[in-house]
Length: 84
Image (cartoon, rainbow, N blue to C red; front, side, top):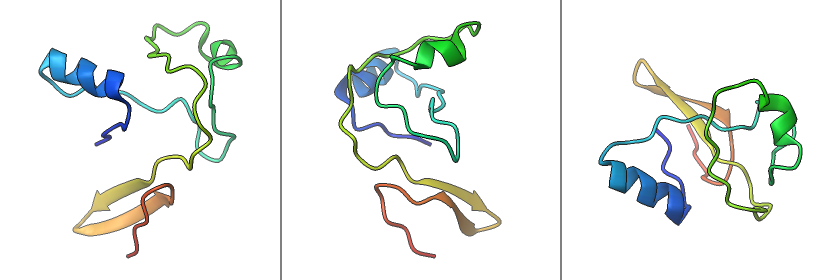
């Protein structure tokens, strides 16, 4: 589950009355995208919606954690520190 720290995305989910199902545009192990300049090349043939936040601050990416069999597996250590 992802809870964005971006008001327009949170507001959109609140107005929909349901969580939004979405993925990050960042591909694991590759450079992080902070604006849309080169993003359109990767997704040109896809039917997608993009919530454009403009140029983002270069903060750490999100932490990605999998919960499996009552254990936490850290796939990417990001802005939230988790220790297992």
